[in-house]
Image (cartoon, rainbow, N blue to C red; front, side, top):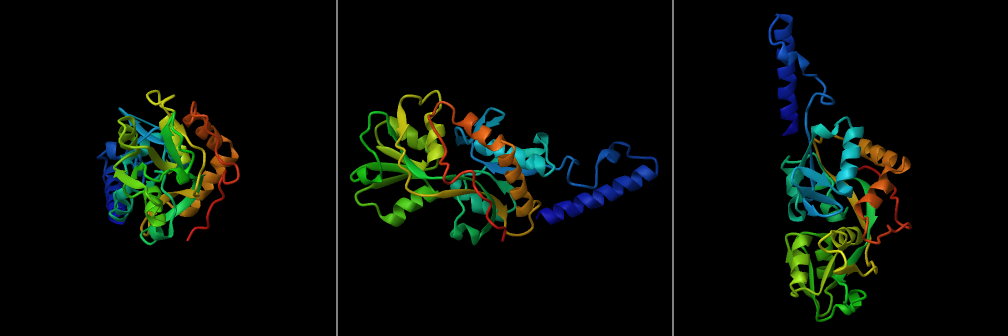
Length: 283
């Protein structure tokens, strides 16, 4: 666990100071006993395949989730060169936190009571609404038009679970590992619509490859609070400090600027009745 890791680091720091006092180990003297500024990495889970939110292109990471993660990490004492971004697929997020593979998750991670049984949350940093992405010439205007249609969502997502829970009559749900694969299936004609949160769909529709081919219906039918996933115990950052950082990002305008930058060309406007979000109380 991380406590063991930091205990080892502390022992190493003491050893380094001892060597320095004896006139040896000059290189090791540059290490600080504090995590902040010492070069210690913070491991942040994001999506690698969600344009506009969390996307990996070579060695570059882009998207709204990424921008919020960088801002928060910097406020917590971790500049960009101390961030290690890792892929956190929807179905694996709880396990990655429970198994000490990640310190924080910014990956369109909806806050739910079921998830709170396994992990903790800070935030929310955005409130989305579940919607539909359809071909540009589609007549589908909302969930009421899905009877007899093939609908795609991602395994382990709250969007897929909502369709299952509501037992939507006559809807054939296909689950894929990523929304990009859902869109590919829709391009091939196997899928009539993709469902997830509106801002995710806006990101998919705004890519150069998809512009003009698809549209977001604009008829949201849920409220999804995106939280920062944290380990239940033994975390290296606190919910309170994260909420303070998010609030600062909202107040100084960087939050809204990040949304505009990452949905440019998608004709998307966030729901002003739900956003900017108010921070939930930390448990």
